[in-house]
Amino acid sequence: DAKTTQPNSMESNEEEPVHLPCNHSTISGTDYIHWYRQLPSQGPEYVIHGLTSNVNNRMASLAIAEDRKSSTLILHRATLRDAAVYYCILRARSNDYKLSFGAGTTVTVRA
Amino acid sequence: DSGVTQTPKHLITATGQRVTLRCSPRSGDLSVYWYQQSLDQGLQFLIQYYNGEERAKGNILERFSAQQFPDLHSELNLSSLELGDSALYFCASSETGGTEAFFGQGTRLTVV
Image (cartoon, rainbow over all chains, first blue to last red; front, side, top):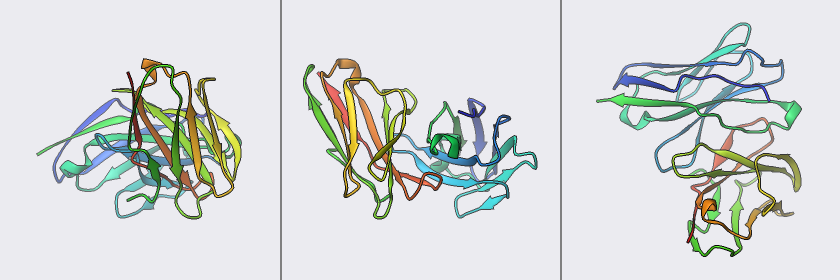
């Protein structure tokens, strides 16, 4: 499985942007980049995904490097509700799009 | 509400027993995934099904088994339960393998 590397933790102030990096240097051309988050005591929640181009949705933006070896999840204005563990995951057709979670990045939002 | 339903929400059982956890995926979703999350631990991928067929296997113990039925619901069977099997068990579904996955609220299993 292609691996991802994320920082263990990040802190942000409320209403400020949060940029969460993810390195995936062994990504292959057909691997999708997915982001999920898990709030305390809840099941994981889909955030966003992309293949090559940058993506925006109501929750976040995903910026993908031109060589696709890294990506950044952008939360435009962090709220207290955004405090969660964020997971960057590669989903590959070669392994039937297995959805395998690593340690993720724990995001703390200060009021 | 993700549209994925897991039952029961809570389950308390004794060591050595067998339990069945049930997952109803979102309407139209063909892929189902099962995960185990022990206290303060990460999400461990157990197994994945697509339209009734097993597609990927993770760290699933031999005491555990799963299946996906023709109506696409899935069941995770845990047998010869041990104290260490106490965990949250999550089910997720997606339309196909590469699309976004939606998670249920989990079944909290306590083995005493």
